[in-house]
Amino acid sequence: MQIQKNRGEHRKLGVALVGVGEYVVDQVIPALQETQYCELKGLVSSEPEKLGPLKEQYQLPEENIYSYDRFDEISDNPGIDIVYIVLPNSMHVEYCIRAAKAGKHIICEKPMAVNRVECLDIIEAVEQAGVRFSMGYRLHFDPHHIEMMRLGQQELFGPVKRMILHNSMDIKDSSPWRLDKKLSGGGPLMNNGVYCVQAAIYLSGQFPTAVEARFAPITDRKRFKEVEEGIEWTFYFDNGLEAHCETSYTKDQNLMRVEAERGWFELSPAFAYDGLKGKTSEGEISFEPVNQQATQMDDFALCILTDRETRVPPEMGLRDVVIMEAIYRAAKTGERIKLELQQYATSPEY
Image 1 (spheres, one colour):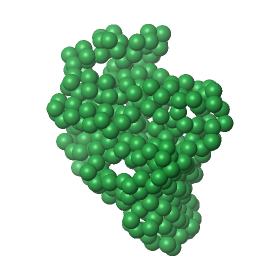
Image 2: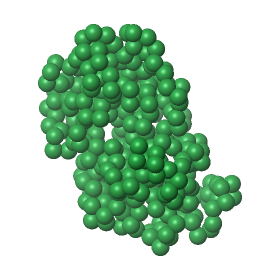
Image 3: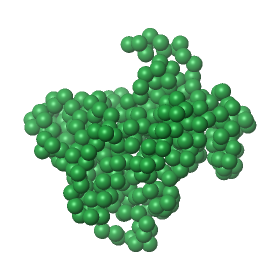
Image 4: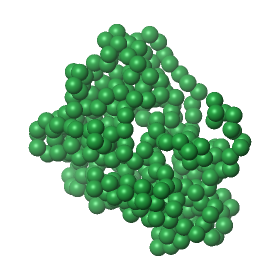
């Protein structure tokens, strides 16, 4: 209720987007036009052919346009409050640390980084700079997922017994950087599978304690010579719950299904930007659709403006990278890998 009372009393926070790829142009910039507490103020890229049209379209001043080499000069720009890192995964650590040193609050696209050491380096930089950090986990702000969290964590259909979480996309010849391990850190697990990692925790309100995994057979060795084509894994929980997960770059999958003691509930599609459809063993569920990115950015802006913590903090990003490292290790060794997450994790309760 406090947020409702304060609507209109806060200034909009200026956002600079680092990277101007397809995702930024198609998703993030349009979302910024729908926000109440944010506004597009700057762009960072070393591709002038992309920057020029965007600068003109959104009437951005020249002093708010930065190349990667000049990025650190953003510290002198009082009109930019938040830097949103939307770059290939291996570049997250560098630009998160540079943004923190520039005194800017940070949103970082998933995954937080390509390994736990880089995540810890980001956390240290954020703490030293005294800035705020939010993971770009948009689904925490979607009403369908919030309802799935409620159904699972409050056990409205009884204790959860089994989860099926599939998130894949056939990338064909798009996004070549995703197939370059130096840039991506890994294959579909790092890009799509992280959503399944997230969902297994926020649906159950519990942390998995072990994982088994296997790589999918490679059907195209020319494309998938550096990263996995697909991977399947199973999370095991202390109460007997299992979560069966799959992600691939040569399939189209988008399913969240939760089977409980007295019924079931699911989203299909589950992880998309729009068009989410929910149903339970008792009937369909639907909510007014939201722009997930706009809702996410507004929530972070309000965290800054009202001095409260984000629900998707850096510790959550670290936790998920630790889990993905364990999934890869399980697939490579064929062993069941024990997970000890309490030292990394924020509370799974929503």
